[in-house]
Image (cartoon, rainbow, N blue to C red; front, side, top):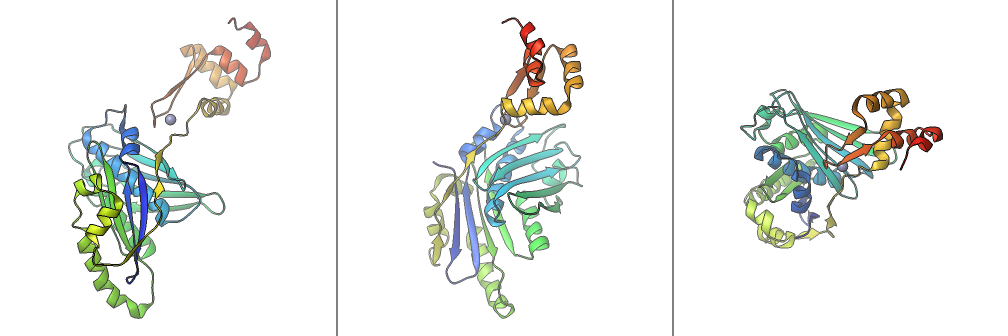
Length: 290
Ligand SMILES: [Zn+2]
């Protein structure tokens, strides 16, 4: 099954929704990391949520959704862009015995949503990680920051990551009372979704099952892919930015410079000749015997 972001609208109720299935990208993110199971699941949920936010917050550019705190899991982050290219990483420093966000992030954790549009101002939103699930923290975020009633159902197991969400659209005051009942009804319907259904069924099947009495409009799905974006060139610019003196110190100490990508676990090695070339020293380059 493909990784897809689906968006939909109800014809007669001012509510929009999104459904994300991201199992392949999820597999790539957790591969080669040996994360404890609750950490894997949280990264899966965060991946799905970031894809949803990318479409909900509507921008052209990049997004980072970062969970941080001082518990046994000080950091989890997923980066993405409006092309739905995503990557993620977590840092684990202690024993993980729970998937409860409050405990994982030490009780004082917070979520930072950063959006860097291609044009215009950078935007940052922050919400406390004071609920046990990511879904609840996101719901609190939308209520606080946008005054929009929003609900998320995020699911992950060892293989799959998927989720569904609904959000009440802003509207006239006199419509709000009627809409509240309709919204609650849709919330109850959506809450009946099972993890296996989100993992196994197609988006159309899921939406038809959940909302078969409603009229909904489903937009063209957008493919979602894992993309790290690290490269030897980027590692080289990082070495250039630390400066020649520091780079040569590392070389003297360690023989070569190893740049490691925490996201995809790729190592980029630079030896003395490589580094000399970076700082454009032809003399040293010539000394290098091949
Ligand atoms: Zn990488």
